[in-house]
Length: 157
Image 1 (cartoon, helix red, strand yellow):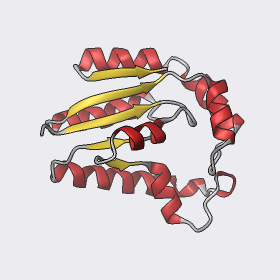
Image 2 (cartoon, helix red, strand yellow; image 1 turned 120 degrees about the vertical axis):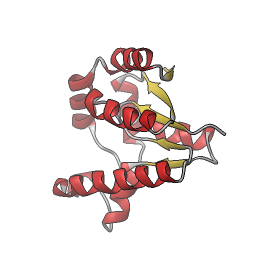
Image 3 (spheres, helix red, strand yellow; image 1 turned 30 degrees about the vertical axis):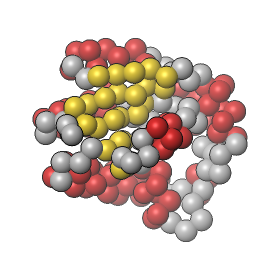
Protein backbone atom coordinates (compact mmCIF):
# COMPACT_ATOMS: atom_id res chain seq x y z
CA UNK A 1 0.00 0.00 0.00
CA UNK A 2 1.24 3.48 -0.82
CA UNK A 3 2.04 5.71 2.13
CA UNK A 4 -0.87 8.10 2.44
CA UNK A 5 -1.88 10.70 4.97
CA UNK A 6 -5.31 12.27 5.18
CA UNK A 7 -5.32 15.78 6.62
CA UNK A 8 -8.74 16.95 7.75
CA UNK A 9 -9.58 20.63 7.47
CA UNK A 10 -12.63 22.17 9.10
CA UNK A 11 -14.21 24.04 11.98
CA UNK A 12 -14.82 22.40 15.35
CA UNK A 13 -18.06 20.42 15.21
CA UNK A 14 -18.03 19.95 11.43
CA UNK A 15 -17.73 16.17 11.67
CA UNK A 16 -14.03 15.51 11.13
CA UNK A 17 -13.54 12.95 13.91
CA UNK A 18 -16.86 11.23 13.28
CA UNK A 19 -16.26 10.96 9.53
CA UNK A 20 -12.76 9.52 9.78
CA UNK A 21 -13.72 7.04 12.51
CA UNK A 22 -16.71 5.81 10.50
CA UNK A 23 -15.03 5.70 7.09
CA UNK A 24 -11.46 4.69 7.96
CA UNK A 25 -11.78 2.32 10.95
CA UNK A 26 -8.46 0.55 10.32
CA UNK A 27 -6.26 3.62 9.87
CA UNK A 28 -4.43 5.24 12.78
CA UNK A 29 -5.70 8.70 13.74
CA UNK A 30 -3.58 11.43 15.30
CA UNK A 31 -5.69 14.10 16.95
CA UNK A 32 -4.56 16.88 19.27
CA UNK A 33 -7.82 16.65 21.22
CA UNK A 34 -7.02 13.04 22.14
CA UNK A 35 -3.54 14.07 23.30
CA UNK A 36 -5.05 16.89 25.41
CA UNK A 37 -7.54 14.53 27.03
CA UNK A 38 -4.74 12.11 27.91
CA UNK A 39 -2.67 14.85 29.56
CA UNK A 40 -5.17 15.95 32.21
CA UNK A 41 -7.86 14.42 34.37
CA UNK A 42 -11.41 15.59 33.70
CA UNK A 43 -10.59 17.54 30.53
CA UNK A 44 -12.82 20.48 29.63
CA UNK A 45 -12.15 23.36 27.27
CA UNK A 46 -13.19 25.88 29.91
CA UNK A 47 -10.41 24.71 32.25
CA UNK A 48 -7.78 23.82 29.64
CA UNK A 49 -4.34 25.25 30.45
CA UNK A 50 -3.28 26.82 27.14
CA UNK A 51 0.33 27.00 28.34
CA UNK A 52 0.42 23.23 27.66
CA UNK A 53 -0.28 23.75 23.95
CA UNK A 54 3.41 23.81 22.87
CA UNK A 55 3.83 20.42 24.55
CA UNK A 56 0.74 19.13 22.73
CA UNK A 57 2.32 20.21 19.44
CA UNK A 58 5.62 18.53 20.37
CA UNK A 59 3.84 15.26 21.14
CA UNK A 60 1.80 15.51 17.94
CA UNK A 61 4.94 16.09 15.86
CA UNK A 62 6.74 13.22 17.60
CA UNK A 63 3.88 10.87 16.72
CA UNK A 64 3.92 12.10 13.10
CA UNK A 65 7.67 11.43 12.96
CA UNK A 66 7.18 7.91 14.33
CA UNK A 67 4.56 7.20 11.68
CA UNK A 68 6.84 8.58 8.96
CA UNK A 69 9.75 6.44 10.21
CA UNK A 70 7.55 3.33 10.22
CA UNK A 71 5.99 4.28 6.87
CA UNK A 72 2.44 4.01 8.16
CA UNK A 73 -0.65 5.41 6.53
CA UNK A 74 -2.47 7.67 8.98
CA UNK A 75 -4.93 10.52 9.46
CA UNK A 76 -4.25 13.93 11.01
CA UNK A 77 -7.73 14.74 12.30
CA UNK A 78 -7.55 18.33 13.52
CA UNK A 79 -9.01 21.65 12.38
CA UNK A 80 -5.85 22.42 10.33
CA UNK A 81 -7.37 25.78 9.38
CA UNK A 82 -4.13 27.76 9.36
CA UNK A 83 -2.56 27.51 5.93
CA UNK A 84 1.01 28.03 7.20
CA UNK A 85 0.78 25.16 9.65
CA UNK A 86 -1.12 22.91 7.24
CA UNK A 87 1.41 23.44 4.44
CA UNK A 88 4.36 22.81 6.76
CA UNK A 89 2.82 19.47 7.77
CA UNK A 90 1.80 18.51 4.22
CA UNK A 91 5.19 19.42 2.75
CA UNK A 92 7.00 17.44 5.45
CA UNK A 93 4.89 14.42 4.54
CA UNK A 94 5.32 14.93 0.81
CA UNK A 95 9.10 15.21 1.30
CA UNK A 96 8.92 11.81 3.00
CA UNK A 97 7.19 10.30 -0.04
CA UNK A 98 3.66 10.38 1.33
CA UNK A 99 0.60 10.90 -0.81
CA UNK A 100 -1.20 13.84 0.81
CA UNK A 101 -5.00 13.95 0.75
CA UNK A 102 -6.92 16.98 2.03
CA UNK A 103 -10.38 16.14 3.38
CA UNK A 104 -12.05 19.56 3.53
CA UNK A 105 -15.23 20.12 5.55
CA UNK A 106 -17.22 23.09 4.21
CA UNK A 107 -19.76 22.97 7.04
CA UNK A 108 -21.40 26.25 8.02
CA UNK A 109 -20.66 27.73 11.46
CA UNK A 110 -24.34 27.38 12.40
CA UNK A 111 -24.30 23.63 11.73
CA UNK A 112 -21.00 23.30 13.62
CA UNK A 113 -22.45 25.19 16.57
CA UNK A 114 -25.53 22.93 16.68
CA UNK A 115 -23.33 19.81 16.62
CA UNK A 116 -20.90 21.29 19.14
CA UNK A 117 -23.71 21.76 21.68
CA UNK A 118 -24.37 18.00 21.50
CA UNK A 119 -20.73 17.02 22.13
CA UNK A 120 -19.23 16.01 25.44
CA UNK A 121 -16.25 18.34 24.92
CA UNK A 122 -17.95 21.42 23.48
CA UNK A 123 -15.64 24.24 22.37
CA UNK A 124 -18.45 26.81 22.40
CA UNK A 125 -19.88 29.44 20.10
CA UNK A 126 -17.12 31.99 20.67
CA UNK A 127 -14.37 29.62 19.49
CA UNK A 128 -16.29 28.43 16.42
CA UNK A 129 -17.06 31.95 15.22
CA UNK A 130 -13.57 33.21 16.10
CA UNK A 131 -11.99 30.50 13.95
CA UNK A 132 -14.52 31.00 11.18
CA UNK A 133 -13.95 34.76 11.07
CA UNK A 134 -10.17 34.31 11.14
CA UNK A 135 -10.08 31.58 8.49
CA UNK A 136 -13.34 31.94 6.54
CA UNK A 137 -11.55 31.40 3.21
CA UNK A 138 -9.98 28.11 4.35
CA UNK A 139 -11.94 26.01 1.83
CA UNK A 140 -10.69 27.96 -1.20
CA UNK A 141 -7.20 28.27 0.24
CA UNK A 142 -6.96 24.54 0.93
CA UNK A 143 -8.21 23.62 -2.55
CA UNK A 144 -5.68 26.01 -4.14
CA UNK A 145 -2.87 24.51 -2.02
CA UNK A 146 -3.90 21.03 -3.07
CA UNK A 147 -3.89 21.94 -6.75
CA UNK A 148 -0.57 23.81 -6.61
CA UNK A 149 1.17 21.05 -4.62
CA UNK A 150 -0.43 18.14 -6.47
CA UNK A 151 -2.29 16.88 -3.38
CA UNK A 152 -5.55 15.03 -3.77
CA UNK A 153 -8.57 16.68 -2.17
CA UNK A 154 -12.28 16.25 -1.51
CA UNK A 155 -14.87 18.64 -0.08
CA UNK A 156 -17.61 17.46 2.28
CA UNK A 157 -20.54 19.86 2.64
